[in-house]
Image (cartoon, rainbow, N blue to C red):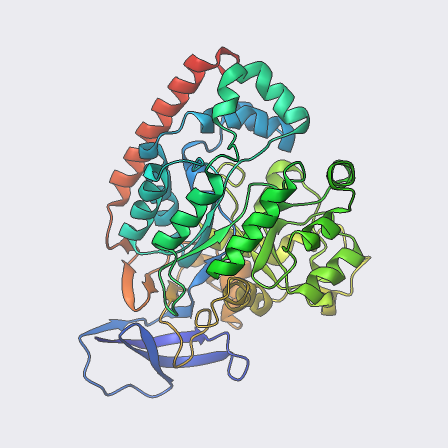
Length: 474
């Protein structure tokens, strides 16, 4: 089937040879970009879409999220919580989630992403439990029904540790054990899930990565086993990593090694591995990431929401580390329109650092930011067929109308106007694998109001159950 996108006022291709076009037309044949040109495309087509007044960009790629957290956004007890208090307030809620809750949360997350022009998303799903497939089936089914391209990080929660675990024990008593995954059957379940669902082929709509919520220094064999399964299965590896001083001390105490020495020993420092946050990497560690091909998911809104340090983006990118943007979980972002995170990411790294950076060299440009959210993200996830509007690439694209008040007066540089001045996050059109999944700002395969109503109902029920189980949360 051929679809022709006509009259795009601007096209940001993210192709180094021709990064930007004006008044262009794009044809898509069977899910692959066929032509990109300035003259009208005179070919028979089953569908045409008029994009007059629109900026067409490659579909955005979000490299870090937690879909299940969509039911626990803006929880009042956590409004002013830094990371430790935030976890203590939210783990009891997540412990009570059912497969139906996970399905509703994933549907809401996928809908928000697609409506904001995001065509591919990683979901670090560490709340799947180590036994059974009901939860993962619910998650995958909800996301696939809306048409998003999913990179599912088949995660787990093998440990919480430290002060957080001690505080949670006081609240949850014996119920905490049901949240933490034991070794029994965990690797076998992960391997079975990978074998069932992971599709390594170009253009696949579902790929897997593996990894615990955090680097698990207290169970080092598990980290090595994850790396071995990922290598044998062609999967990526992903986890949270800062590493703060307390984490460095834990690694030395449990493994006799510094965090990156342990990760290298466990087989994690390799292409296909990416870590979220990395807020406290030292220069020597940044150099090791670059040499090993390890990527970083930078989640700008979480830096503000939880009071993290700002990761040294300019030093990472200057050293050759691939950095892309992540929305992070809905409970540490509270918003789900990934475009907002790209806009924030373009600016946040500048705060408080102008005297330590060369602004012409170190500050991101709008083109840098959009490439981080498309081409760089695709390469981080091992998807060279995504992230650019070039013939032969998969047809993942998003169009935004720049005719509103928010972009008025900012169109001398339309990409800059879109990211620096623009406030609208709703795509006029989102296309995934050549299929239009958002048309005229509306979901094609879902009812936005019904999705929101189900999310609200599930969230209310979850909070009632959790508060009944844990009176301290009332």
